[in-house]
Amino acid sequence: MIDCIESADRQVESHAVTERRRPHLLITILTIACIGSAPASAAPDSAPNSAKVFTDQAGKFGAQKCAGLYSALGDLVSRGAAYSVRTEANREAPDAHIIQGAVGMTYNLPELKGQAAGMVFAAPVAQGCEGQLVRVAPLQRSCQQVIKELPAGSAATANLSGVPLYQLGGNRGQVLMIASGAGCVVVTVNMASQKL
Image (cartoon, rainbow, N blue to C red; front, side, top):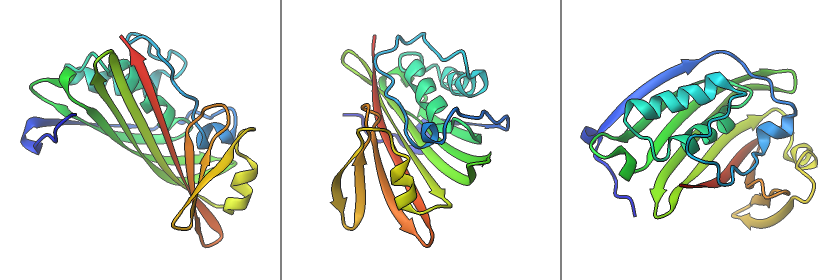
């Protein structure tokens, strides 16, 4: 288990990215495909700004072991948005501890406008790295409309104190949906691993 790291042991790197990358579909923004077991050196070439920002920030800490997974998750959580990211890692042993990023995003697409937030985590494990992303996106349409846009094979799996949890089709993670007035706050959660 990774222990909590005191703030004095952390370095923080912030960076803003303003170039917007338009996703192919709205559902790409709401659901994220699993990373699988990409090698550490594989960083997505198709999204140079986002992947490069996360890779560069991991590199400034000397974090190499999980940098590829951290980058891939960062690219996925921020896809389609202008964003800023703040990365934190352990200063003394970056490859032995978690690296995390807090991401603030602004969408300005025809089908999606407004702010969202995300968290990206990647940590070393015995055979490689494991990571997770969480994105919170308030949408300007009802949760019932959002449910209709989920990938084929998605299914409601639980009701957590009135908050529906959906397992997304195609092994794309999970989504929590919170009704907020006429809108819907969509919380996307996905895990990934990388074998070294």
